[in-house]
Image (tube, rainbow, N blue to C red; front, side, top):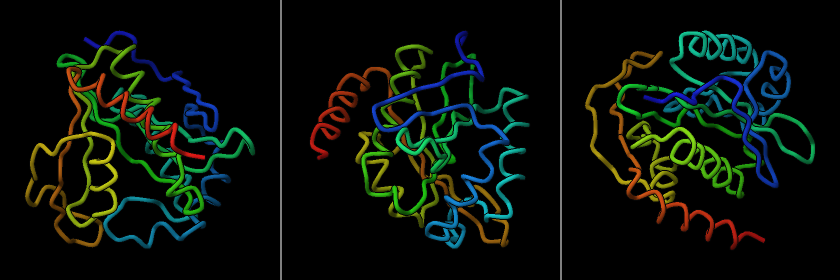
Amino acid sequence: MLTLLNESIKLQSDLITLAPLQIEHQHDLAAAVEDGKLWELWFTSVPTGDGVLKYIETALQEQAHMKSIPFAVIDNKTQKAIGSTRYCNIDRNNRRLEIGYTWYAASYQKTSVNTQAKLLLLTHAFEQLGVIAVEFRTNWHNHVSRQAISRLGAKQDGVLRNHIIMADGTLRDTVIFSITDQEWPAVKKNLEYKLSRYT
C-alpha cells in the first residue's frame, strides 16, 4: 500500500522544481504550449493555449479522486512553469504507478530538464513511496517519446493494440515500458551519470 502518497508533494533539483499543479499556472503553461505549438503533434495529448485551463481542471479532478498527482515543472531561474508531468494510473494496493502526461516548452526540450524531472519522480516513487514498478506509456507513433523512455533505462513490456480511441477517431496502439524496484539502483546511477555530462 502506498501510504505516503499525497497531493502536496514538491520535488526540487538545481534547475527545476516539480510543484503541485494549480490554476495559477494557467498563463505560464499557455505560453509554454505556444513555444513550439505542441498541440500540433497529433499523437500526443498536449492542450492548446486556450485549452490549458480545462487541462488543469481535469488534472485536479483526477487528483481529487486519487487517480493522479499532477505537477507543474518550474524553471528555478525564471520561476515560470515550462511544462507539466504527473503520477497517474496509481495502484495503491499493488504499489505501482505511471509517470505520464509529460510535456515541456520546445525551448526546454533536448536539455537536462526531462532527465532531472524523471530522476526526481523516480527517486521519490521508489525511495519514498516504496513502489515496486513505475510504468511509462506512449503512442506507438511517438518515436521521440519511445526513444526518450528507453534512454531512461525503462524496458518495453509490450504493446496494447487499439488501446485508445483518440479525439480525432483514430485508434492508438499504446507502448508500455517499466522500471522495477530491482532495476532502480542501476537506472538511478545511469541517470545521475547522464546529468553529470551536461555542461
